Image 1 (tube, rainbow over the protein chains, first blue to last red):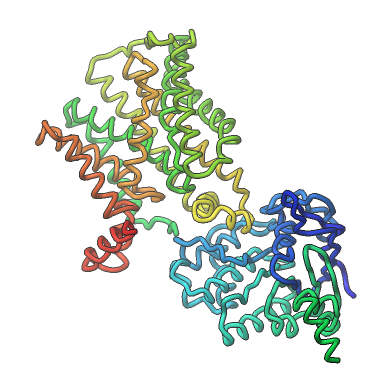
Image 2: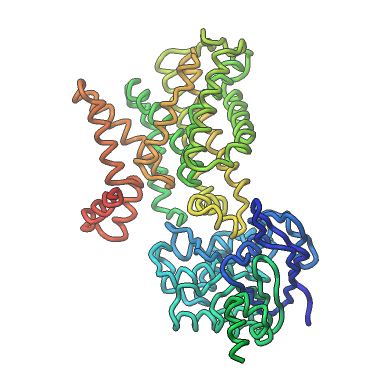
Length: 252
Length: 327
């Protein structure tokens, strides 16, 4: 495999007595699409929060291109080249779509000494890419959910990331919108951005991912190519329950 | 969001300032004094706009820094300092205090932040009430300005005008650059702002410092003019409330809003006082309530909307605004 971009070693995060993420090791290689799956409450979003500096770790280390980042603040991590989208979209509601994306271009990268005008140009380019350019002057609060997800995407891309962490960008979208989103994610990867995607829809994961990591109760229970992982007994147990597996075994 | 002004807009603004410069040449002293008050409120409102309007942190601190600047001018002038030098020292000191205070209290959000800033003003008042250097509850005298009423009315008027123009220009340039965008992003969604790479802590502190230096300067001018200060007089929470009300009525988060609001409300209050002496406060109160209901984001936002949608949509906009209050 190619060069390591993002690496976690024994990452643990507890909330009081609850261990949300438990000694998880992970590696993201440059240029891949890595799927992160697991049942509800498995700790996927918490892991993203740890990577992006929103939650502090209890134990473990996170490296981005060899630099330790687990104690850095979110805005510093963003400027280093890690962008994310939120599961529940987080637009700037009373600003136009263009201004929303402009924020990412103005502040997102280390050479962010850009003026507003140039940031607008970058923002327009990203809006073109996600197909929202015709909504550039609408307020973010006037967009549909699918459009808001795309806005979130464009805003992250405007920060000029090396890796983008996508937290359920397809939740709540219809079939056609999902196909669009898949095509878009591929396009982003083809432009050289590494992708880590949290997703519930298996079709999306199977289609997109080069590799998959499965979390369950905060622990990593499987890792590998999509086909291998989905036929792993532990994974099936985690998703469908022990009883189901036992029943299937009985039936042969 | 904030488009750079066109040449026409700058020309109109320049004409406005020019008119304010010429005005004292053919006006009575009481008119000049009236405008001095308007400018003072406009300075407080513009300053509040940095933290309250652009960044979305409702501050009651203007009175604190106004009083702080007033006392610094009083103390330093008694020690023989030049008046303008005291203004510079007062605003610099106000800025440093805002920086030190901002670090702890800007961690609070919403109502908690508002209460903390309220506490700051009260704390300063108590200090002034009890320290020897401020003259305690007895107050403090300043050196009298030399010259007749015609001279000193104009002197203070132009001092206030200078501070107001400075505050306006700083606000204009902040809103047209990265800093202004960052502040608005924090107002709109602080977590998302951090995620787009904005150092939210730093930006909030900058906004708080900017919102504190100009009230400190205005306080200095006020002190020299009043020639005598009492804690209850300059640490009056009414200064903070006026700053907020004027900005809200004029247009939150716009550069013209605080100016328009200060001018209209001061003249309206004056007119109501002369026309309906017995119940002018009640009328003013009713007008404020109605404008908050129908124009929750202020006059400038109404103008912007009208320019986009046309004058015919006035009724629809007002109806739309008031419907927000239906639960």
